[in-house]
Length: 219
Image (cartoon, rainbow, N blue to C red):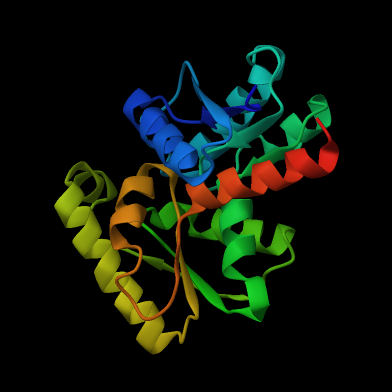
């Protein structure tokens, strides 16, 4: 029987949850990823207050996750609830920011996080510091325009991200790019392979990381 991993979407958009589950399953088909969406909160997390509330909402799920799981992924780029779930659960837990940043920094690469949410730039930098990667993070670069309007149009989103990626490669000399956001996962897949440096997709990286953690833990 396949190991079962709960993939938690800390925002309320079920379509995003299902899209992330599909990407995780593509990366690690030997694992069954179970979609879990928080019951309350914004459709997209765009500012620190919502991120903090998401952390509390994700932590509250610790006693309500599917039975028999072997691991958990928290799938918003601020990794809300990561530490709380690790403290509460006996199975491995990772977050998409943790997995994406660690993958980007492999081989001592310097990386840039490209995202759409200006108010979350500071929390993203704090996450890099928490994971010991502050010296590897060159910058957090942001798309232009209203975040909700940009994210509502897939073609506009891809074009906006691509523009910032090119800037980060040329101006920051980034050696890898992390696309920072669960709702950006589909765009990250579309952009992968189009540039001279690796485009790191955090959701597939989290799937691969949780698989490694499960193997090591013997769960």
